[in-house]
Amino acid sequence: EDQVTQSPEALRLQEGESSSLNCSYTVSGLRGLFWYRQDPGKGPEFLFTLYSAGEEKEKERLKATLTKKESFLHITAPKPEDSATYLCAVLTTDSWGKLQFGAGTQVVVTP
Amino acid sequence: DAGVTQSPTHLIKTRGQHVTLRCSPISGHKSVSWYQQVLGQGPQFIFQYYEKEERGRGNFPDRFSARQFPNYSSELNVNALLLGDSALYLCASSPLLAGATYEQYFGPGTRLTVT
Image (cartoon, rainbow over all chains, first blue to last red; front, side):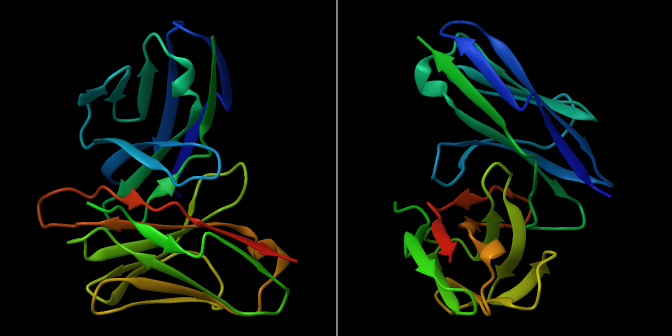
């Protein structure tokens, strides 16, 4: 059975304190891995897609990496506006549109 | 360009009632997917429609149904509402172009409360 697990569940950071979020997955075949940011009461905001092991993508203070078993979202020198829940999702090769999400990591960045 | 739009924003219904949620995808996107998100959890896949045909169905009871219209907008219908149907319902659209990307872009969601 396909599984997506995110850790930690919650993360509290001081402004400027870099850290990493983990998304481990067990799937029969990976079509793509997606990272989203979600603010309370709003829809997820697309951040990155990673398609193959070794791939990396960057956007401002965020960098996503992918291996054959897990993905990391690195937050470098975070600011309070980076506070959100970060969701990881996988799309398997037997589907075009069924994203399977982890439970998310809630990140709080304090000044 | 406008993003994915959903209506209504909030909805309060009583157990046993029926509800219809609406979604308009990003212009040019032909695929729409529906998700249910309960507080503290990641979204759970309900349906995917592409070119007006159902292309995927999640593990939800038959009380849940959906359809896609010729303009690619979509409706999600839920019959015989239960308290456990209270959640944020999310619609996502995707271009699903051959050989290209599979990104899904989400709308703001409809918050459904069943009392």
